[in-house]
Image 1 (cartoon, one colour):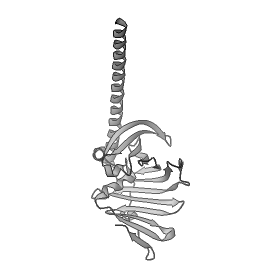
Image 2: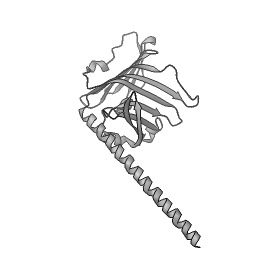
Image 3: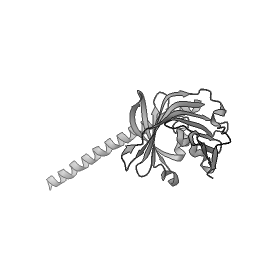
Image 4: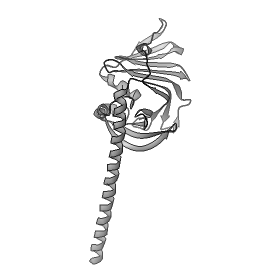
Length: 236
């Protein structure tokens, strides 16, 4: 009987210790998350624009490999006077492709085949910022759309970063991207890498480099002037 009681006490003590350790780790994770979010909040308050070199790779889970070669080019992002996102992603390699988001329209232009696709964003207008998550957005706004967790620290291009996991609250959004990870630079509070994961394991990995904050970008950068011989496909 004494041995049994002793074992029960030992198990209880071990469980108590494990609970205390777990609570301590959760508190530490929570504190680190709040620290990163405060840094992002400060950055968002001063945010005007963002430019960077961009590299994108698509990973296919069933093949266990990345598409080759990766896409690369330039990325431009700023806010319009009404607060909406203005975005230009200009891929130059391996084939030129220009994507702009301006007001209610996303326009994807492929010069080589003289074709452009136009999408009306409508009620999905806010989804435009999925191309630039962790860049200039207030964490307060992000929390309305995502559950946010701190996932640890990492180094990207010799820069210390904090990794955050964003899980969409909207089931329809989660059916496209179940998890979005962002690498936030500790020095700037701005994302330098994004990983957009689909429910079945495929994902897009986006890396920014040579980032510049708050340089002047003319609004004309986010408007594409297409020649008359370009076929425009209206998607909706």
